[in-house]
Image 1 (tube, rainbow, N blue to C red):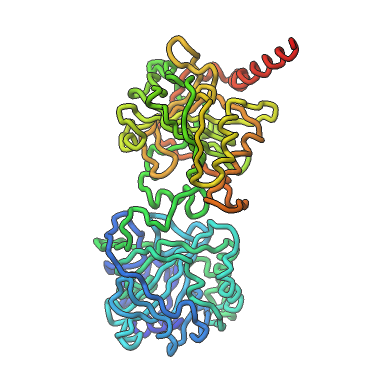
Image 2: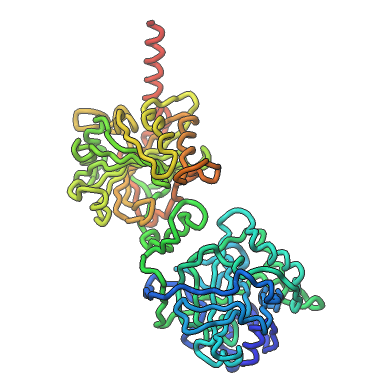
Length: 594
């Protein structure tokens, strides 16, 4: 067994054969003779939510950025692509600190991948799989040799790094490795390689997770101090495919590609997983809308983002009575947009994710919502916008599977909670009005001029400017119902959901207006000029090109209609244009009289 592990570390597989699939596959490893694969401290694991903060000191990595003299060889050992350091050179690449009890010498690194870009990592992060994982294997120097280290519980220290394909383009730092794979297509082939281990690691690797575990291949010896890093490296899909083209056989044997080579996660069984940072969310990660910061990853850092009442949603077809319905007893058509006709005083700013207007006179002006099935009175706090790359996307909500290029959210807090911050922890804390937009080159919407004219002033993140001179009523409809005697019921959908940004708190009573507002493509384009950088020239990659969360599962929720929309199906499109057409008609009539 010791000989096997020693040979595995050196890239020489001489032990009894094992594989990832078939009769020698992972499910049969615990049945092997003299195996440890059925013991209680096995690897890999899923990194859980329940973590123990430990004040580990910083890692000291010596030689990782200067390995020209290490005599590196890349080889195909029939299970993976592996880069070995010559035995007499291993002390030149060493690891200490990071909570390790001693110094460890680097022996080799290798990779684990999957059949596609949605699997491959051995460890997972709160259920999240990554397409590639790299392990850098070290042995503890005080044990003199690898053979001696293999006898000890802390004999090996392995660093694990996840890769993602979310970012576009090849990772140029990986090029020497990827190019070398052509030279080791078959088992036992090897080639010299010039590369630094540092080039294969993410630029930032300050945050990590620590636990005690095992080798992830037979005989699964429980001798590993594991460090799995939070920070991700990148690899393109094309680069990743080169790993899958390696063969598990020698050139003269029947050929089978190494399509995948990862062991499934094992149970923790009472083990503690430590982290080296105190925050709930590490400072090295920030939520966004694209790449590894995108909405798909929010649930890994904000547990509420995987709840069962998330937003946005697709508003079902009005004919689907199992998902949406009209109930007159809910009195939704009594919703009052109180003082929505008062001029807004506020501050417009770019928060790096969107353009937001904080409304300063909401509370003093009693501007808000009441009745209409709400659980009390609500005061307006702010409004903001969501858009997409082009005219085919951008809205957060979709209506009967139709996406719109822009959506506005007017956020209200329950008046008794006095602020949005005070309302977010409460289950009935917020009420949000959602308004979707369509574009038409012939319909210039003057009601948005005050806002759109201010957008150049906040093109940079953190930029702020005062704004006034418009009402919330005109942003939705001049006919909006202010009270029992002023205005009309404008149809909407109602459901219970959550914030559409982290922490995704499920505290929102959503009111999504049925009919879209119209603006021109030119007006919409100004939103897409906003950037997420704080200063300097703005390139195409600096623009906030999209800032919407994809629709979430409606689950067993019902979307309620504020009226019987089946009776309106034939007139909805026409009615949404009436205010604009009346405005244009009045303008033309006035010109004619002049």
